[in-house]
Length: 560
Image (cartoon, rainbow, N blue to C red; front, side, top):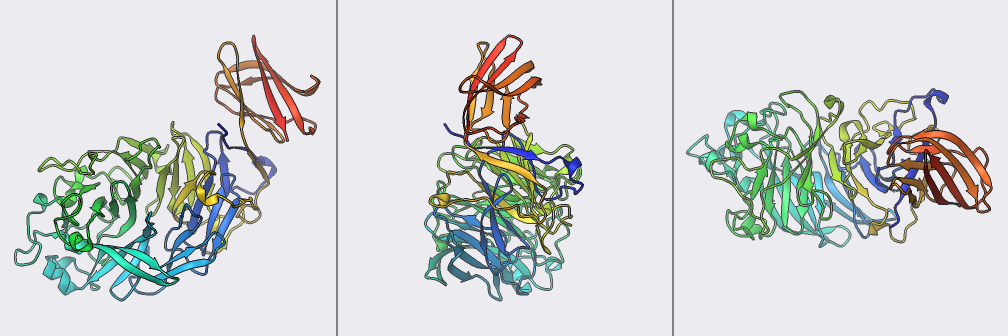
């Protein structure tokens, strides 16, 4: 099987007094090769970069992103945009959805805002071509009081509830709303017996507690944005949606198999619960199944199902921002397994919180406070078991392997003042809502040439990062393996799986003539080493001979 591998040589900092502040910071063997899609919030362009940090494609628009973009298998791009209106003036503001072809031609434009509602934060393109859209929905003070909200907890603007609509695109600017779900249809309150939705909160985990104020983020009393939902996810197999609430620090699972009429009720759909929550996780204090001491999530972002075929498939990965965490502010990436059966139904023991009590996998930086993004951010599990993490508030994208070792790091150089020069500081103006990774085999790239351009940052430091197309491997009689990048370019990349002391390394051409003698060196186990011949080599076949205390290796290599 062929693999793609990047061989990276960064110029020594001592030779370049400019500090490396943006762009490609590190690329280690073990990083999964491919491309990263990012839409800086302060930019009007969406970028596709390779793991060398080189842009290979971009979509230039005339609007700021609102807040992310989705590259579809057919090469089209869905990209919400910010209307820049004063309606619903809060972080995450959007209001427009656009669709572009690979060449940047706009195929569809649709406005999703009015005086009473506004798209914000996220969308989800569906397999059938429709689009799920997350929206704020204004409720007046009178409506909130009638529903049972404590008047002391209503802002002068009223309350913004949440809804999800499904749009069928029509033509270049049209669309039909074919399904919708409203949080306001699924409330419970224990504040005023004379008002609607009255009941015992703890007896209704399927409903939303209208009077819970999220204490881990900040006091929300003076804010109309009571829930501040920030992401959607969809599972086609289950036909379920995850809706995430930052302010309540929990996520809700919703049945998408319902009709719109059923979604407004408490019955119907594949699971017989209408639009009520099928499952929820993160903060059981919201539905009074536990206290704040049992809170798991703190202002989290981007929960979604791990794709089939990957490590942890079917489980939920989430970026736990950590705002309000009792033992200090730091972020983690977590994976947990919902108690779901083959039918998509979830187990709940009466009078208890939904399981599990905690995530079974967590990534915590060392030191732990070195990873902290108080807002936005996300993570994605990759096919080789690695995890891509977007530390959104600082514009950092990095990759860790299965042992939690960092193998790739990139810092977005696109800020609110424009693209900055290498050595300049970002001043937190380079934020990214989330990013997506794609392997080179992704169907969107079929028929397109992804030619690397110059690094995005201005005045980049010189470095050499080449795309190579394979690995040569050989075994000694004792079973020791040595790998080398093959074909090789200007230098040889060598890695052994055990320590090889006093290794004599000689490169021979096809006639057996030595063309490079690297002398005696010691190769540390699983530690890549680079060797550069003193003289340039012509194209052809070469043999690398390695002798180390009785072990002998010969690797056939190609120099293009």
